[in-house]
Image (cartoon, rainbow, N blue to C red; front, side):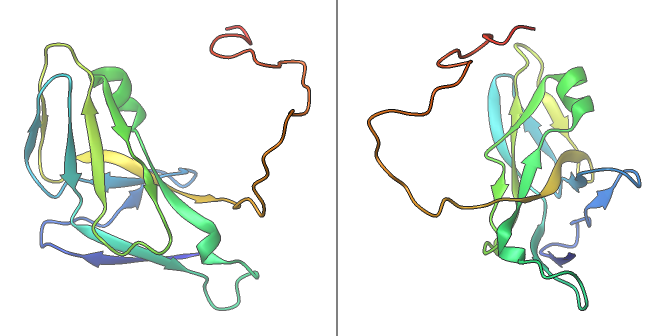
Length: 152
């Protein structure tokens, strides 16, 4: 799959893989921004994207993929940062913004232009072919066991 990048600002940086086996590409901030504690801000990346199958590649359909915008583990663990609203559909051509969430109780987070703020992961999906209303669902061993029901 080929990723096409359109730089919308001079400050925009092209996403990069941090290692040869990285699943996600690092996304960079195109702006300086302060995120107060217990708030979320949309952070500009200054890019828009599309993707397509390359010549001679397997018979794959680019529309069966989306980009998942995910947290960076270091930011999450060290600074209590999370990422929200992380789906970029294959037909979206607008700017990619990152919903940057500062979960700290008392520390603001300073984002500088060029900082790595999130990662994007190309993910395949399938849509349901049919939606049906039923009276009962198939039984499983887990049943209705929810949060924490499978142990630690």
